[in-house]
Amino acid sequence: MAQIIDGKAVSASVKEEVAAETAKLRDEHGLKVGLAVVIVGSDPASRVYVNNKKKACEAVGFQSYEYALDESTTQEQLLDLVEVLNRDSRVNGILVQLPLPKHIDEKAVINAISPAKDVDAFHPENVGRIMIGEYSFLPCTPAGVMRLIESTGVDITGKQCVVIGRSNIVGKPQAMLLLQKNGTVTICHSKTKNLKEICLGADILVVAIGRAKFVTGDMIKEGAVVIDVGMDRDENGKLCGDVDFESAEKRAGYITPVPGGVGPMTIAMLMKNTLTAAKQQAGIQ
Ligand code: GUN
Image (tube, rainbow, N blue to C red; front, side, top):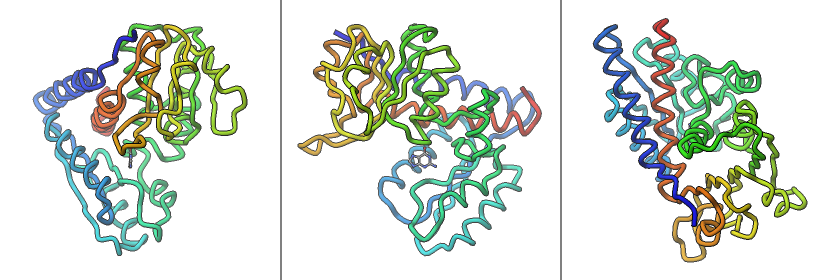
């Protein structure tokens, strides 16, 4: 039976570290840390995410600045706001909640955010930095996954690491991070042949394909570390992951639950990135 990786506990310890450093920055340097969160329209899921980000800011001692814009906001108006935030010295990090309404080009907006304030690490400059290992920020979800793997004490060096999913936000950067930790990395996706065989070779399996219970126990190597990035609904409408937890936990050595695994890590890593941004902008290492 697998050991459950407790994402809530690991994320709480990341947030504690960030809160302690934030207090130190304030006491020793008189610095405040600020995160601007921009939401356009009234998507209920986005609203929940944005509220959670605001709460996390309060918990670690950041200032949060929320910009809730009407659905009818034009691309030009949004780009103007991003430009104002780029220049605002109270704002160390800028997060524009995605998805944006269809009439706005997401790429144009991401590209307009100053790379130094891009705490999502979505800007092409930051994406490129990850490729060459010279980054300041890591995208929050893959960074959270690395932290969860670290919490198991399993050394990535030389291990067979399989990532299922090739999105720009999770799969691709995840593979690079595992490679930087000396894993032997295979990226699989919806067109991959022999997926089961490849998965069975994985010492570390990260699943981010967006299909409910896609990975079953018979695809998992005995003792593997299984990290489930999925947030899906099962046939009864119940929240579940990309991994069939019930069968997988019988084979895995360590496994993340959904909810309570990767989910809580994402916001914790956003807080960490915002702190890093503030320190860099102030010239403090
Ligand atoms: N929408 C869902 N997840 C995210 C995220 O991590 N960052 C942003 N900006 N939007 C999102």
